[in-house]
Image (cartoon, rainbow, N blue to C red):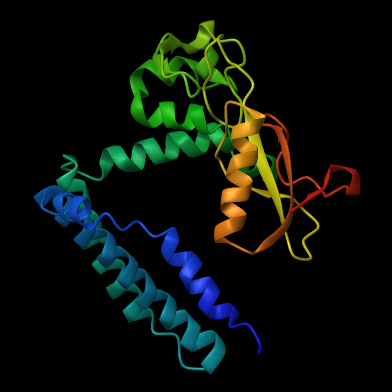
Length: 246
């Protein structure tokens, strides 16, 4: 008798569903969240309609409807206006200005592949959250290390200043000088040649190992794993000597 893999997959998916519906309904009782949800749904809907216009032109040979492109763009602006109002922005001006500042910091005067790949997300976040304090440092890469703004350690949660950090920029997270090495689980799906992983980290190798076998009990989509320090580069090619089979 053959195994129904789709049934196993659906049951496994259900185990990872966020199903605390009572709490979710409480969150949805907020007028702010309802308005933001309406705006986000509308943005996705209108973007889909705009994309459908291009799809029908490119793949079906229909005439490109440029009037519709402008119409859908206007609808997108309507939903963006609602979103801005909800978060207290009464104009698009500040959003546009900060967006350009962020992109100028990332690329300089023009686009480059290197700038797109080697982004310093902490610095870009600072430009958006503390625009006046970060302006003097925007010529420096890793400018978070030069500021006196408070941060919270990704590892221990304590407040500290980035300029006093030890290894302040790891995976675009901020760590204080009390950083302890944590562990990460990498897994191999069937036939994959590169390790897959998530942002989960563990205090000890034993905690990481327990997670592996708990995961395997719920999901049969991988056949090997390794436990490595969390600072290990991601997306490494799989080497035979690193593999631990389930």
